[in-house]
Image 1: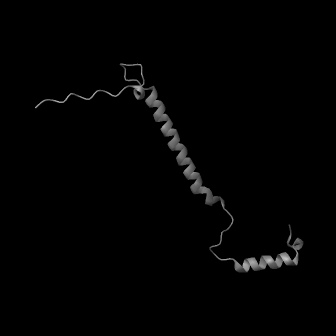
Image 2 (image 1 turned 45 degrees about the vertical axis):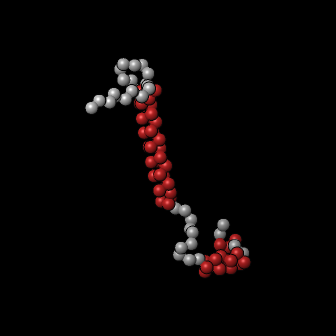
Image 3 (image 1 turned 30 degrees about the horizontal axis):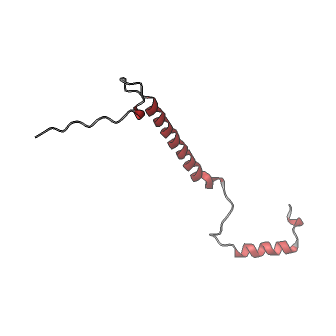
Length: 84
């Protein structure tokens, strides 16, 4: 759309809007504005992968004496207290 295609009324409205514009007004999004969001999403993905690997490792690791995964074994009995 060329400037020639804009009616005088639209030009007047655009001039009024430009006169009201302040430095802290919202502006168009630029590619660098999305960098924090991309970093946050990448960090969340890394955390999810690490958590998944840890859960998978814990569920498939065996202590050698049993074929039950460590995560599914019952808690060991507490050590007996010594009498004084």
